[in-house]
Structures are given as C-alpha cells and as structure tokens.
Length: 394
Image (cartoon, rainbow, N blue to C red):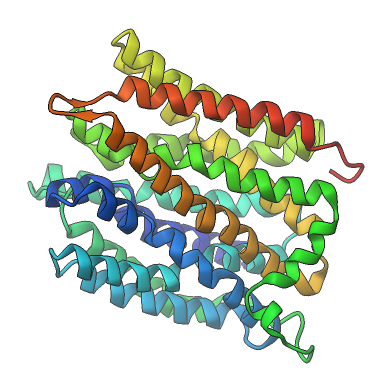
C-alpha cells in the first residue's frame, strides 16, 4: 500500500506540470511574446527552484513532508488557474513565478518522501510513475483536439488542466505515508534556510565536480526542455504535447533499467551514459535537418528518458548516497536549485539568445542551432569523463 501511494504521488505531481509546460513555448509564440520576455517566462520554473532548499529545510526540521507538499500543490493550483485567465505577458509571468515557487520544491520533496520509505535502489520503480503521469498528460491534448474538436497546444487550456490535477493532488497528499522531519530540534540558521548546509559536502572533490557538471548540463538540455515545442510549431507539427511525450514514454523503460544498470556498471558509468545520450539527441536533430529526414528527430525525442533517467535521476541517487540523514531533503532541494534553478535559468537565457541570433525574415536556422548544441554537449561529456573519478561506493 505504501508503494502504491508513493507511485500515485509521483504520477499526479508530474502530470500537473507536464500538461501545461510542454506546450508553453508554442503558446508564448502564438501570443506574440518577444524573445527576452519569452526566455523570462520560460525561466519561471528556474526561479521557482530558488525556494527548493528552503522548503527542504522546512521538511527536514519543522513539518511533516506530506503536509508541506499538500500546501504547495494548493498554491500551484490557484496560480495556474489565474494564469489561464490572462493574455497579458507580465501578469502571466507573475502567475507562473508564484506557481513555480509552489511547485518546484515538490520535486525534491517527493524524492525525499519516497526515499525515506524505500531503499534508494528501489526509488526508480516509484519515480517511473512520474514519467507515466507526464505521458498521460498528453491525453488532454488528444481528447480536446480529436473528441472535443477544440485547439489545445498553443492555447491557455493546459493551465486549467494543470490547476485541476494540482488541486486533486493537494487533497490527497495528506494521506501519504507520514514523513516526519528528520532533523527536528536541531538549531536552524540562514545557511540552513537557503540550503547552503549542503555546501559542506563540496569539500569532497568528486561531489563538487558532480554539482558543477549538473549545472553545466542544463545549458544544452534547456534547448530541448524549454524550446523544442517552438521548434515543433515552426515545422508545423500537429500534436506538440503528444510528440514530445514519446520521449517520456520511453523514459519509463529507462527508469526501470536504472537499478540494473547501476548494479552492473556503477553510478559513474550510468551518468556518463546519460551524457552520451545528450550528444546523440542533438546530433540526431542536427542530422535530421541537414539531410531533411524528419524521422531522425524522433531519435532525439525517444532518447530523452535515457538522458533524464541515467544522468539526473542517477544524480539524485548519488546525492542520497553522499548526504547524511539530516541533510537529505535539503540536499535534494539544493541539487534542483543548481540544475533546474540556476542551470535552467542560464540555459534558457543563453539558448534564447542563440535562437534569436539565428532568426531571420525567412525563419530560424535550426541546423546551426542544433549544431552548436551538439558541440557543447560533446565538450561536456569529455570533460565529465576526465574529471569525475570513480568512487568505491558508486
């Protein structure tokens, strides 16, 4: 029963986000939002990650984690509903900033809740339901377009769908397995409040290198994660959400392979495989454009699960192994701050500038854009292999 509840938690938590995030760039393009403002709105997720270490500290020291999660989802539901009511980019930005301040801490929080009640090696078997939730979110698009004959991708409807799922999750979260604070009664400081207690782990050279490369990886990762729906809009793809969700569908299989891969190869090699997949993704996008073979784009889409599962979920497992019990929730929040916070913010801004640079009256030069992203991914992979050393326990 515990595993069922944790699996349902993951399914709802990722469904509520995927349903509106996946087509967001396409929606902003249809609104006529400028490139700088678009990059800022797409960075609302990254800015929301700033709250992750703070919420991690609250869960570590003061409140039961499942109650914190319920409160955050309630905030997210309200803000997504308001986001659906406005066409003003400034108001939309404010709504999504507040929504993400409520939502983004939940990724680290749900990981901590699951890992308290499961061995870390079993975590991927529960986390895979987050991928299932992401894929299932694509059904909203199919239902609206095929059955209700209403446009979905590129409209405000996904915000209302996200709000509904988030509200349902908020109501059910209090029934999750009780996860009391692990560091109750310990002295709290500003360092703890901002998750900087995790920095003491940076004395470990390998841990520091892992954190740095986790940040750097989000720069090329952002080109797909934040802007790929705009690319699909440019090539006149009909089902944007469904097309991108093929990658998350494949992710489910890769998630289940993580424990087997870790046992056979170790965490270091598993994370390297994830970065190799990142290179293959952008190489397939580049080659697909150069030789005018659209089927090659699906290679890059389908390999998403290998990238996210092996490098980022593998990284969560690495963090769980390295952090002491009293820092586990805070450390999970910290890694999300570094990656999907500061890293994604930097990635969105840089990728936005690259896309804008290769824009002309005829459209976008996506071949050049994918070529640059491929080269940066190759450099990242080579440096990680050279600098991140093998550890006995990983």
